[in-house]
Length: 396
Image 1: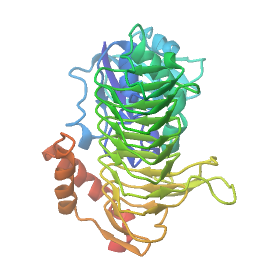
Image 2: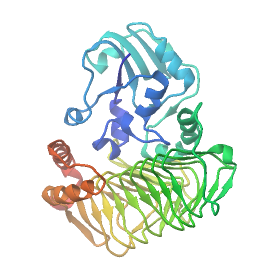
Image 3: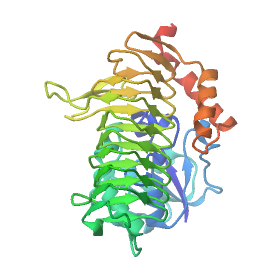
Image 4: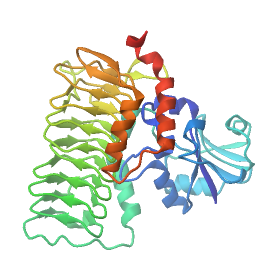
C-alpha cells in the first residue's frame, strides 16, 4: 500500500504550535503517534504530505500513483481502517463534510480530492482538531494502543518483590524494564511500560498509563492516570491526564495536569500548572486560526508547550497557557497565557530568544538524548522564527 498522511489545512492551523515542527500525523495521542496507529492497522509505512519546510525531515511518497491518502488528524480504529482499505481507485471517504481518506490513481493536490465521489463513514471517530483534544483523548487512546501493542504477546514479569501490582492482566512490560519498590495500579486502565524503561523507588502509577522506550519515572512520582509519555523522557512529581511527546524532562516535584508538552522541552523544578479556574468557568486558550482566544468548552485545561521550550524553577503557568516553539520562561509571577515562539522572559516582560542562542541550546539538549541538531532542524527553526515574528509584538 502506497500510504501518505496529509495535513488538513484548517486543522493544522488549529493544532499550532505542535504542527510548527511536525506533520499532524506525528502528534502523539496515547502510547503511539497517529501515524504509528495507522501503520499498525494498515501494515504499511506512511509518508507525509505536509508543508514544504518540513518535507526534508518528513518526506512525501516516492510516487504519486495508486496512493492511499489519510487525514493525519483522525485516529484509526478497526472499522475505519477497513473502510480505507476497501476504497476503490479515485474514491473518497468523508464524515459530515470532513475528508477522512481517499484513494487516487494519481495524486495532484489536496483540492482535487474534494471533487472525488465520496462515501459517508457512519461510525464514531476521534479527530484531533485542537491542542486540548490531545490530552482529552489520551485515556481512550492508551486503551486502544495497549491492545495493538500487546495482542498475542506475553509481558515480561514483574520480578521485584517490593513492587505492588493491582490487576496484573492489564500491565505489560517490554524487555529491559527495571522496577524497584513501586506501585502499579491498572484497575482503572492498562499500564504499558516500553522497552528499557525505569520505574524508580516509591513511584505510584495508575492506569491508563503509557511510558515510551528509554524513559524514566523518577522516585516518589505520582502518575495519576490518562498519561502518555513518549520515548527518552524523565518524569516526576505529580502528573495527571497529560501527554509528553518525547525527549523531554518534567523530572522534579510540581504539578502538570490536563497538559501537552512537545519534544526537547524542560520543565524546571517546582513548576506548577493551573488546570482549573477558581470560578469554575470554561477555560479560554489562544487559537492561531482565529488570532485570538477561544472558549475551549473545557473545565480542565492546563499547559500546552511547543518543542524546544523550557521554563525555570518555580515557574507558575495559569489555566490554559499556550507556549510556542523555542521559548525560555522564568521569573516570579504568572506569565501571559499566550507566549509566542522564540520568547525569552516571563511575567515582567519578554525579549527575543535569538535563533543562534536557540540553536546552541538545542545542539546540547538533543545530544543528551542521542539526538542531533543538524542543518534540517536548523532550517525548520529558521522558518518558524520568520513565520512567528508578528506575534512577538515587543519587536515592533
